[in-house]
Image (cartoon, rainbow, N blue to C red; front, side, top):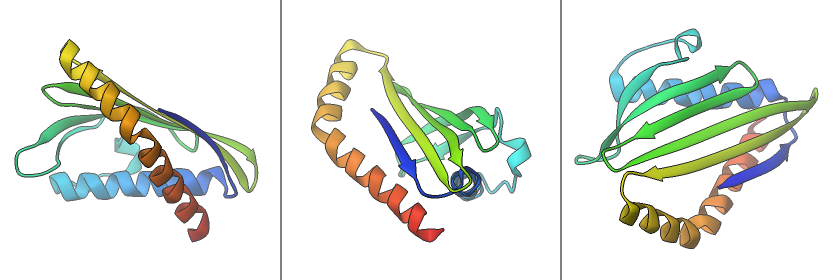
Length: 137
């Protein structure tokens, strides 16, 4: 899935909203109180419920420009990227991409079918989140 959207907020504001969320998640999942400077290459186990967890690795971090990570479970690898481009002092272009790689052919087919069925809902929810971030500025 790929979404490109212009936002009426500074790129620095959007970037820090994302990073604040990441730091909160790390603190909640691990109890570690780390700083933005420690995020690049940081890895931790993220628990989704009592039986499901995955390793999350921050693969790219460029202040005010990019945040990429991968989440790897026993069955799949989920790659996510936020690429942020300042268009002006108060306008930002976000390119959000996610890609799922499965370890088995059957899991890959399942991911494609579910992604096709649920894709429009996920896009809608993601755009709602972006609107909320804009409104919070």
